[in-house]
Image 1 (cartoon, helix red, strand yellow):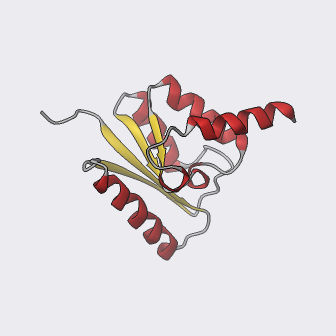
Image 2 (image 1 turned 120 degrees about the vertical axis):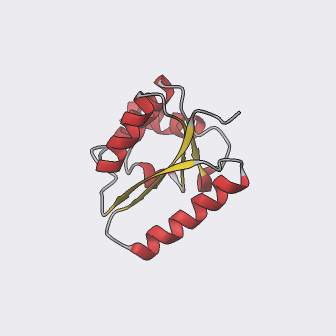
Length: 127
């Protein structure tokens, strides 16, 4: 029986750079294929800053998560997801509230990314 939930691959580059986007896509797609995430839905913000979650494809991803369509989000590294502690913590809180696992390929792969973000949260509270 086919899983009703899809994995999401989220891609982002700050300036429109098709070569960087293609390289990012290759890394994440290879990881997804090697780890059994064959049926992925792709979300790409090309030319978007990561300092806020207010991005077209990020908004679409968050809507799909809210609708229960996505249970895993795969990114090349956390900087592709967000740049800065506030949006990263905001996305982590959102993902956890919806039972979504985030996998950062170059920040530990299948390891739990929450351990990375716990450090960010502690640092943010200390400031």
